Amino acid sequence: MDPNWKKFFDPQTLAELSGSGLRRLRPFDGGALTGVHRSSRHGHSVEFAEHRPYVLGDDLRSVDWKVYARTDRFFLQNREDETALVCHLMLDASGSMAFAGLQPSGDAQSKFDYAARVAASLGFITLTAQDQCSLTFLGGNGIDLPLSNGEPQVQGMVDVLARCQVEGDDHVGQQVQQALARLTRPGIVVLISDLLDSPQAIETAVRYVRAAGHDLFVIQVLHPEEKELSVHGMTRFQGMEGEPPVDLQPEAFAEAYHEAMQEFCQSIEQVCEQTETPFLALTTDQPIGSMLAARLNQYYG
Image (tube, rainbow, N blue to C red; front, side, top):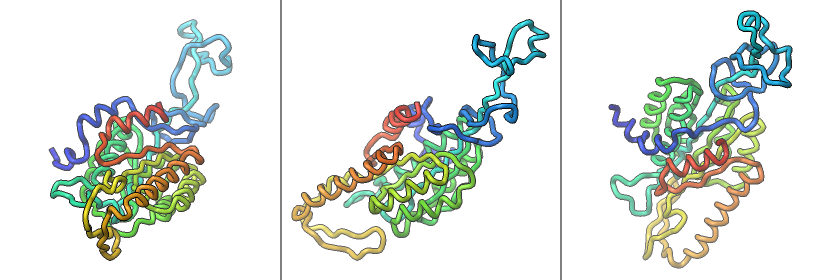
């Protein structure tokens, strides 16, 4: 087995996500592929999908009279198209996603490592549902994976995730807007990022995604030490995106830092609430499967 499969696909996580999945919160035109998602297209211009028994009150114009002639029973031609879901994963690969703790060990998990597993898990359950998925990197040096479906797309996702290296500035809001131009079809955009940008920039990006005809699911990934600042004594803080190092005594500003971080996280959550955007906040020490499944079932179950 490809060792990268074990890195990105955890059997327990996938088991916990079994039966969960994404769906658009409004009807959509998904294209020609057959899936399990309702389309907004109705009427005679839509291809025949299946028969179902007549129920009192149904429109008799939809009765299949040829079937009636053979069976002496009323069946309707169900013309509500079932189309494939389109999922666009946007994964933050900018420099700040390399953070793996203030004193990381050799096997410490970075925010990008964790976020990549989230993206891979969502991609897997989307593709195994016979839906379509793409993967777009925000920053970093990764190669985007164009929209497609099937088992080869799963392997393609593993390959591009394994090769991507984080780097660059973290202007997530601006990068989301630029990435939208590379998406070929409307669907659900899943943004996976630490969202370390101004709340105003994040809100602008959210509104751009919605205005482009996509649904949006925002997943924020932070490291526990970013939220708690649990280091003590004189410490050298090194910027992840080219900033010069700074030597500081954490105890001197810990309270102000906690307040600022709490205010920032609340602002991001408020942006999502105000725009009716599904949101999930994760830290890298939390189990992906149970956390993600609970939120998927809450919004899309």
